[in-house]
Image (cartoon, rainbow, N blue to C red; front, side, top):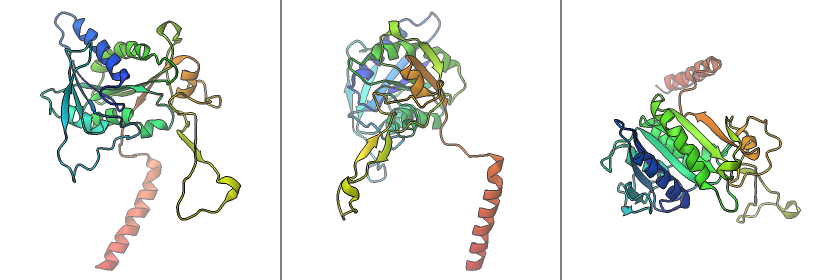
Amino acid sequence: MKLLLTNDDGVLAPGMAILARSVARWIEETPRGDERAALIVAPNKNYSGMSSAVGDVFGRPTVKYRRFHIAGAESIATYGIEAPPALCAILGALGSFDFEPDVIVSGINAGANVGRSVLHSGTVGAVLTGAQLGLSGLAVSVQWGDDVHYDTAAAVTIEVLDELFQAPSRTLLNLNVPNLPMSELKGVKRGRISMAAIIKAAGPRAGGEALSDEGELPLRLGAATPELGDVSDEDADEDGALLGAGYASLTPIRGPHEDDDPSRDALMHNALEAITRQIEKSH
């Protein structure tokens, strides 16, 4: 069992440190006859909200890296690289650090990644990228607040690992944990991705003023923010509502794939014919 760890908050983020120490203990407790190992390849700074972006790899086809040491997890080789989390996942998965992982864990993110924020999250983007290279993955986030309980999220994460290693390749899970001590966590449930958004609206300009040639647009934040906003309009089994009720939410997800819904057949047929006619006219 070889585990690649990354995140989007940076290699020195507290969530990474706590996760790394938990994984180091998990490795130390390896049952006789099993093999466990881990590698950390994470951004050298905060790259939150980067989704699956890799940056301008054409204009700059090299990546700077630096070795780090995390107290309590000295046994895990740790590298901070000048790259967003998706590129960290790629470089870690392709053996750039002499390590070939089976599973990628991204986190522990400082803030919930529920609802439509899943699309924009660098934490989730890393595991989606890993899946394109054959890895199963777990994105882990904890609700933001005072005295964030990363330890609770780490404990839940460790319990998921054995199942994830046994699952088919490219199995992806999104785990969100409320900001509670383990003793107050009500449990974990399968959560559906809600319609909650990070950006709820661009607020109206004062007095309905017309747009000038240059200015600023005020943004109004929705429920899918790091600390979790009002989720009272969500169904009880949706991810944000579960967090609000004191449960961890575990959601299976998958990355880009062909839409093979038969209802798209007529659209595709008509579009292909229209394009073909235009091509034939140009000949």
